[in-house]
Image (cartoon, rainbow, N blue to C red; front, side, top):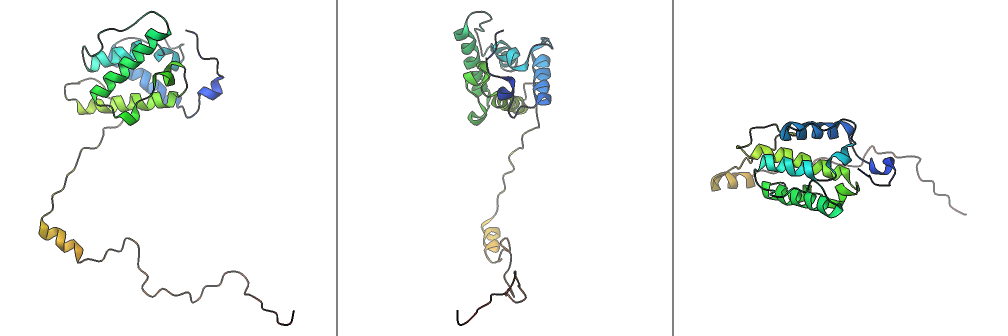
Length: 184
């Protein structure tokens, strides 16, 4: 696959090779397909085929047409279909990337963030029995207080900002004292 003409050091900003390997391992387990180890990470995902297959495993039938051959337009369409399906699956909008971020390798770190968000979203789907990626998201812990409990809290003076009881400037000595010279 022809890659971007940008130097590798420009593409590699904020990327974590261990994280990328963890993502590739997760994709291999989810899809059941082996990714050749000699292909760079961004090239393995660039055409969007693997991403579409991951989504079809997580949400069967969500992507009906995966373009396995064709030009740039078809591969960009694969990535767009993946992003649309990921949104329907529950990945937050703030974690999504743009198709050009992956296809042109502009922001691979954001692609990694999106795939981790997808792996975390799997925890919220009890029908998914496969592997997860990343830590389990926290569950909501809603609290309900009675009116009496709320009123009791108003009588207590909070010390979050600290206390200024007994605060003076005595004893402070910063640097040399000021010298006032008369007559000049």
